Amino acid sequence: MPDYLLTLGPILSLLVGYLLGSLPFAVIVSRLMGLRDPRSFGSGNPGATNVLRSGSKVAAILTLLGDAAKGWAAVALAAWCVRQGWLPELAIPLAGLGAVLGHMLSLFLGFRGGKGVATALGVLLALQPWLALATTLTFLVLVLVTRFVSLASILAAVFAPFYYILGDNAIWRSNAPTTIIIVLISVLVINRHRANINRLMAGTESRLGAKKKP
Image 1: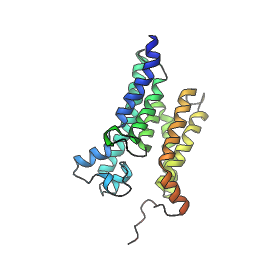
Image 2: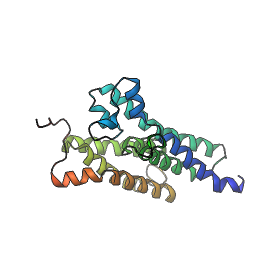
Image 3: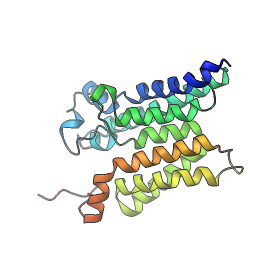
Image 4: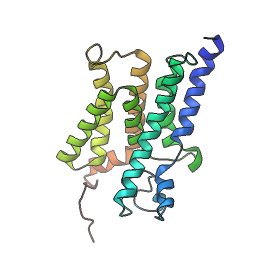
C-alpha cells in the first residue's frame, strides 16, 4: 500500500462516513410521506423517536432503518476497501465515527442533527454483529423495565465499549483503535443526551407510552 494512503486513507474514510451520516432520513422520510418536518415539533430532534410523535409508526420505522443503514454502510464500505488493499485497517472504525458525527452535525441541516443512537447501532452491526445484538438487547430490556428511551440509550452506550472489551478472544478479536473509537462514539451519544439527563435527574423526563398532561 502506498505511504500516502496510510495517511490520507483514514481521513478520506472519515469524510465519506461523515457524508453518509449527514443524510437526514428523518427529514427525507417525513417529506416523502407528506408529514411535518420533525424539527418543527416535539423535541425538534431529527430522529426516529421524534418522527414517531408525528403519529406515523411506518415513518418512524423507516427513519430508524435509514439512520442505522447509513452507519452500517459507512463501515461496510470502508471494510470492503480495506479488503481490496486500498485503505489501512484504521479506516474501518473511523468511517463509523464519521457516520455518527455526520448524523449529529449534518452537513445538510446546517451542522445540526440527531442523537446518533440508531446510526451508532448500525456502526456496531457492521463492526461486530454480536456486539450490536448485545447492545440492542440491553437497550430493549432497559426500555421495558424503565420505560425511558433516553435512559436506555444512555446505558446501552455505556455498556457497548465494555461488551467489546469483554468479548475479546472469546467472540471476536478487539483492537485498540476500534476500542477507542467505540468509546468516543459512546461519549458522543451520551453527550447528546445532556438535556435528557437533566430531566431524568429532575424527574420530568417522559416515559414511553405515557399520556401527556392536559
